[in-house]
Structures are given as C-alpha cells and as structure tokens.
Length: 222
Length: 189
Image (cartoon, helix red, strand yellow):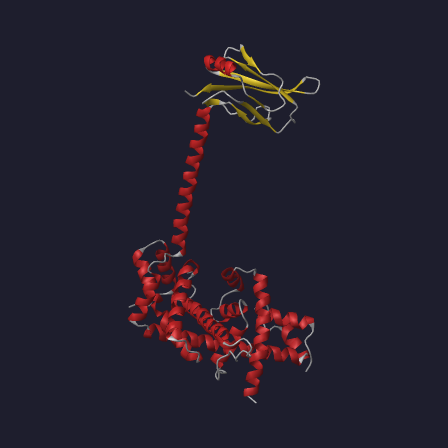
C-alpha cells in the first residue's frame, strides 16, 4: 500500500473539514494517482454514512423517549430544577447585588470624606512632605505636636504656634525628634488661646531652614 | 395539536429566561423526557446504570441543560439539543462507576478490564469509539456529525479557537477511521 504524502494529507484534511469537494478534479486526480488516497476517501464516505445512520437512530430514540416519558419522570425533573434559577436570572440577581454593594461602598466612602472634612483641614498635599501631622482640626488636647514626613530626611526641627491673628504664642527649642511636648505652663497659654495655627521648619547642620510645613489649624474639641 | 418547531422552542426558552413563570414550567415539563432518554440509551448501548446512577445522571443532565439554556439556538428541536447533554452525562456516569470500581479494587491487583462487553452492533461500536477519543475531541465529533454543527459554532460552544477545533476534529476522524473502518472491513471479510 502506498503511503500518503504531506500534500495528500493536507488534501484529505480539507475534504474532511468540508473545505474541498471530494468529487472535485484535484481530489479525483490524486485518488487515481495514489490508491491510499482513494482508500482514505472510501473510508471517509463509509464513516460518514455510518455516523449518519447512528444520528438517525438517535433521533428515533428521542422520539421514543418523548412517547415514553412518565409523569413520575417529569415530577422528578421538576423537583430537581425547582430551586435553580436559569443562569441569566442568576446573573441578573448577582448584577443587582453587585450594584447594591458598590452603592453602599460609595455611600460609606462619601460619609468618611465628609467626616474627615468636619474634623479639620487635611495636610495631604501640602508641600508633598507631610504624611501625618498632629494636632490638626478638632482635638481633645494640644499636649503633643508631631510631624511625620518621608521627604526630606529629618535633621533638626523647630515648631512655632500662633493665634489666628498671626501672633506667635510659643516656639519650641531645636528638636532632634519630630515631636514636641509643651510644658504645663505653655499648655495653659494654648488652652487660653482657643484655635491655634502652627508650623514647623527643618534645619540643616548650619541651622539654615531647608524645608517647612504649615500653617496647620487646630482647636480643642470641647 | 401542532408540534412545536425549533423556532417555537427558541421563543419558549427566551421567555423562560425572561422569568416568565409559565414558560419556565413548560420548559421544565419538556425536560421531563430526560430520564426516558437515559433509559433508552442505556438499553440501546447495552450499558445499563443502576437506578441510583440513573437518577443522579438525570439530575446532572437537567442541571447542565438548565445552566446552558441561553445557548439554545433553535437549530434543532429542544429535545434533540437536550439529547446531546444526555449522551455526555451517560458517559460521565459510566466513568464515575469505573472510577469507583477501580478504587474498590485492592491496590496490588491488576486493574480489571474496565470496559463493558464488546458491542456487537454499529451503533454501539461507533459511540464507544467516539467516547474513547476523550474530551473535547468526542464532543467535537458528536456536535459535528450528530448535531450537524458548523466548526465556528462548535468552537463557540466549547470555548475553543476554531483552528484548534478543526485540528482536533481531523485527528479524531483519523483515529475513528483506523479503529472503525478496519473493523468493518474485517466483518465484510
């Protein structure tokens, strides 16, 4: 038996995929030239015919099933599907649920933003340096001033506190740490002042100001 | 009474998917033929399931059909489309049984010949050989020859690229040719 060349394999593939008519001249010429091609084509026809016969038998089987389905069968299937919504409905329910969750999230985020605004001005964005600053906005005490920043690197720090008219109330000494705790006497001055504004300056080794932040407003919550 | 056409079936499915209660009930009623399809197919292939296996396979079939209702395209009657699911679930049930039998066997023994008795007629032989192709090649051949679907339709149905479907189809048919045509030639002497 002769074997199939790559070209003949390709030809048969196109016939089997329905892209080429087996009765076409090109196919018939190949079949005459190589008995292996002719045999493959005969097999293909045989296979198709037998599968067609099986398909017809399946159709008869479906008709028989329709005639012989019992009431008990129908009840059983109905029971299976009773609590299962079709996928499209399920998708719709999931969609509504997703929308609801998104809306709730939006309301929550909005509420938090409003709440933060009530608490006082945000330092975010001011010179781009502060990550966290306190006291800020309405606070229970003015006992500790802290500054956290990622840039520039800390050297020494000086903090000054003003009233709302810009008069200096207090000034810290040169600090090694980014925090300052006023003394009791100084705190008394702040308590009397009411709302305050404060700012900081970063100093380099020569004592020159290399960065600064503020003014930040703060007031006692009571 | 006029028999519903595939177009009628498609309209029915569309209504059922739009939460029309009456249409849903009608579809559920139509799916009541699944257990009968399974029984007849078992008889025809000579591979019977136990009543429990049959019940499970019928339920799985109904759920699989239900999950894919939106894919019904009205090219064939609803029951013809459902039959494709019956075939798949029947084979899955047989595979589950074989796996169960293997697990039950002592570890050191050789696995038993898991196949059912050799089929004697064409119908069973063809189906057995198609099943032996494995997934998704068996699916592709069934959709192409038993539901007369185009390759692009099959690709969409199985979520595979069309070129991949065609390659698998060609290989599958080549295997079927080797297995089945040699059998037929032997039978004809």
